[in-house]
Amino acid sequence: MTGAYGMIHVQSDIGRKQGDACDSITGLGVPRWLSRVCTTVEEGGVFPVSDVTVETSKPPIDIAAGIPDPTQLAYRQIRQAISQVLGDKARAFSALSYGDPLGERSLREWVAGFRNVDVDSVIITNGAMEAIFLSAIATLDPGDTVIVEHRSFPQAARIFSRLGMRLRSVPLTPQGVDIEVLNRLLESQRVDGNRIKAIYTIPNFQNPTGISASADTKRKLLELAEHHGIAVIADDPYHDLWFSQPPAEFPGEYRGTSGSPLLEIGSFSKWLGPGLRVGWLIADSAAVRKIAGYRLGVDGGPATLTQYALSQVLQGSWGNQWLAAERRFYAEKAKALLETLQCRLGEEIDVLPPQGGYFLWARLPEWFNSSAASVRRALAIQGINPVWGNVFTPPSEIDVGQPDDDARHCMRLSFAHVSKNRLEQVADRLRDALDEVRPSH
Ligand SMILES: Cc1ncc(COP(=O)(O)O)c(C=O)c1O
Image (cartoon, rainbow, N blue to C red):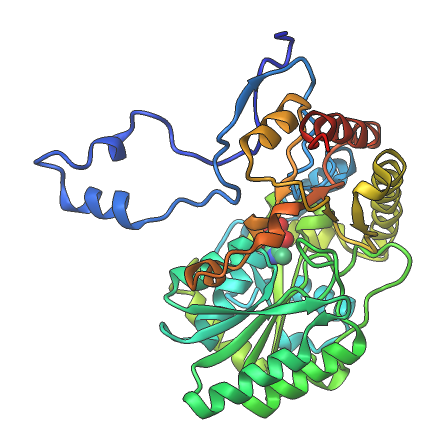
């Protein structure tokens, strides 16, 4: 039956349009620049293009998107802040002019106070993504190896790969990255000629697994990094969206201090909106100054108006009050999804209860194979779009012929974007899809 929601795709993608210049690059007379663009520049979609298109009457429920709930953004406050900044003669011109490549002083001060570090160790970036990019540029050369977690945020892996870095992965335990395996890897590299220069970790409410590293793991990771002279790029955009208790901090003596291997990344994206494109990097102040100089040749500095507006809106205790409400809101949604999944799917689903962030990581039975066309079809008919486990498998493992079989039973569900009512329907739809494909024996 074809309903109002007609054709849907299982997973969304930022794909290029059909019939554009890149479709005909093989012909004679194609300019060399265009041929270079079309063959060498990889496109940026996070998720694979859907291979399934079905007709369904079910309204789609977007459990793929790692973006905020549209009802939870501070539209009014941000609008007022922009208008206050532009209405203020003392700030209006500066807010529309080039700014400091370190970022606006008032916003850096706010971040320093919020994260309890020295202001000189803070640089404002265009989201966490740019902070990952700048950290990679600062600490790694093409051909160097960066360690990533198994599993990890695919866009970060892309940044490293595009800059010519190699990836190796280490497993995650419920307490964070597996320190013993990491230690063995670093020791073995010492013998073989060390190309490992950094580890990229998502220390809290990890994307995709939701795991947070314990205080002990965080300390050991830094001690190990210090011992081996490697950098720790800690990408932490979910840090402040904890549900019952804040995550353990990295030890104070490593946070924004001189000579520390820690580059700590944060972002406003997950609680004030990714469209602001404002995040930060906290590191050794000398490294931060160097990075600020370098970025003049990348983006010229972060967007000034947005920074002025943010530091206006964050004045006083507003930020903390807003965050407190966000935490309660997302905690409730996480609970709603968790409870309905457990209630409707029982033993057929194994879930890591989320303690913060946006995502719930789930494992389905062995027979469930997300790459099977029948499974994708059944879920598409139900109008739900989990992100399959293999999307988060570091490409290095696939490259060296280690198929991540376990990923086929796993998926990431986002409870962030869709309403609580909709989330409560996910479990029923998933169960109906499983009923469709479950083997009969
Ligand atoms: C682990 C991780 N890092 C970085 C980002 C991007 O953050 P930003 O919008 O601040 O660039 C995301 C967004 O999904 C993420 O999950």
